[in-house]
Amino acid sequence: MKKIKLLLILAVIVGFTSCEALEGLFEDTTKGLSQEEVVKGLRTALIVGADTSVAELNSTDGYFANALLKIFLPDEAKPILDAANSSTAKALGVDVVLNKYMDDVILRMNRAAENAAVEAKPILTHAVTNLSLTDAWDILKGVNPLNPNKSAGFDSTAATNYLRYATFDSLAFVFKTPINLALDKDLVGGVSTNEAWGTLANYYNQVAPLLGGKAVSAQLGTHVTNKALDGLFYKVGKAEIEIRRDPLAWATKWGENILDLVFGSSEAKNAK
Image (cartoon, rainbow, N blue to C red; front, side):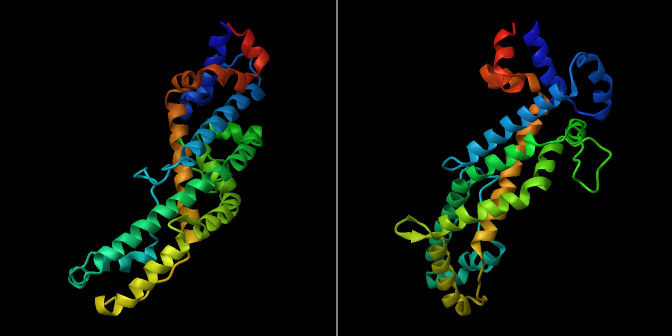
C-alpha cells in the first residue's frame, strides 16, 4: 500500500496537463505529504530525465545519427553547399571533392558535441537540486518561473525551459573548451575538424570565382556549442513531456531504484 502511495506521489508531481487538473486533484492525493516531499519527487524526476538525455547524447552517434539533432555546417557554409550542387561544379569536377570535405566536417562536429555532452550533467543536476520550493511549485503548475513573459497557459516543458534560462550560459562556457579541443584534435586520418573545415573553406575559396561565389569564413566552436545545447534541451524537453504524459509508466521503466532515488533507500526497502 505504501509503495502504491509513493508511486501516486510521482503521478501527482508530474502527471498534469492543465492548471485546473492540478488545483482539483492535488489536495486529495497529497494529504499527509509535506511540500518538501513532493518537491523532492519533482527534483528526482527531473534529474533522472536530464541524466538519461545526457547519457544518450554522450554516446557515439548521439547527435550524428539523430535526424532531429544532427549538427550541420553553419550558415556561412551555404555558398559551399549551393556551389557543390551546381551544374558548374559538376562540369568542373569539383562537386565530389566539396561534398567529401563537407561530410567529413559534419561528422567531426557531431563527434565534438557528443564528447562534450557529459559536461552538462553536474550543471543540470545542481540547478535542479537547488530549485526553491516556490520555483518548483511554479514548474509543477506548468510555469517557468524565470520567464519574464510568463504565459497564462500550461507549459508541458516548463522545467526544461527553466533549466535553459538557468544554465545556458554556464553550459556554453563548459561546452566551449571540450568542443574546441575536440575540433582541434586529430580524430580521423590525422586531421582535426578545424583543419578539415579550413581545407574545405580554402578549397572552396579557390574555386569560388569560377563558381560565381564569395569567400567564406566561420568559427566552428561557437556554432557547434550552440547547436549541441539546442539538441540537449530538446532531449530534456522530450523526457519531461514523457514524464508528464505517463508518470507511472515512466516510474515503472526506471523501476528498481526510482523509489530509492525519490524517497530514500530505507523507506523504499520497507515499501510494500
